Image 1 (cartoon, rainbow, N blue to C red):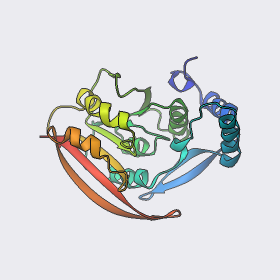
Image 2 (image 1 turned 180 degrees about the vertical axis):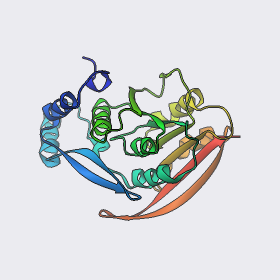
Image 3 (image 1 turned 90 degrees about the vertical axis):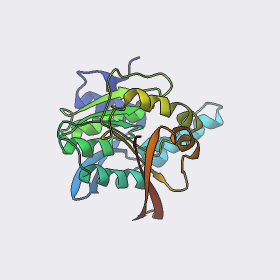
Length: 237
């Protein structure tokens, strides 16, 4: 059955009902980034949902942990950058592995046209739900993607993503995905953020000859402790 998040005429209530049907009660939490506040949908009783997954795993079923539901420090760092970096008024942004859509929504707050793209159907559902909750759906579209084969048929000024380089298949196929979707020209960039411990070495080895790279290490202190976030900018040579 087609993912309801991709249904053009899906209403907010329909999206919310679909999320509740799978995850139980849904709550909206306020996330503050650089003075901007957005409301993000969260699974109200995450422990109960994880307990159900554990029961499935004991029964021999494959399970996927909802890692997309976590608001990672790297997303907050990149989100702040999305609010402040210089961009043309008509720039378009592709937010890949968007999770709940935080970074893309912050770009949309500035008036930029945004596509929130995901490989995970549940994450895409929450991303579209969040876009509608924050009244940004006029600037945002959603898309299901597969890095190995997807061609959206258009190119973007910026491709952004958080914590997407830790899987080998991403390191293998993401460079080709970028080449299909990043505009030509010195102004177009890939903007990535990740915990310093998840450095994406394989990906950067594959792209070092094609892109100029600038990396900044940003200290982050949050409720879960301190960490170092690597903020990476990649542009054509």
